[in-house]
Length: 131
Image (tube, rainbow, N blue to C red; front, side, top):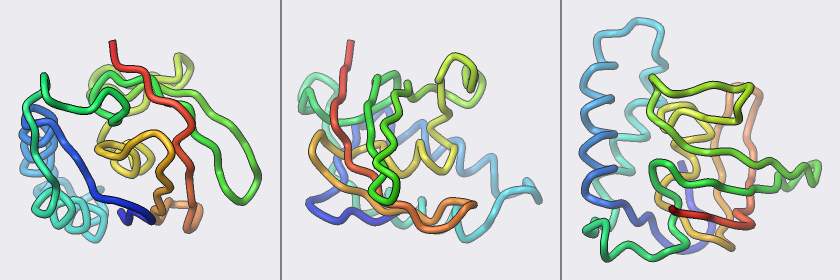
C-alpha cells in the first residue's frame, strides 16, 4: 500500500484487529505473502490514535467510503467490514481485501495506490462517513 500524499492514520482498535488477522493468515497458503508483508510494514509506520481522537474523515472499520479510480473515473461506494461480514452484493468489503487494506487509514481527498490482482490502481477518496 502506498499513499501518494500524507500518512496512514489508524485507530488503535483497527490496528490491533488488522494485526490479529495478519497473524492468522501467515499459516494460510492461499494468502499472497507479499501482500501480507506489505500490510505488516504499513502497520509498523502508521500513526495510531484513540478512536475518539481519530479525524472524522479517516477511513476505518465500518466506514462508508466513496472512491474514484484514476484510470476509468469509475465511482464506487462501499463499507469496510470484518472478513466475516463481507458481502459484495451489499457493497460490504473486507478490511483484509486488497481494496480494504488500500483504503483503511487514509483520509478524504487523499490518493492511494495499491497493487490489485488486476494490476496497479490509483484511487481518490471522495467521501468518508463514520457513524
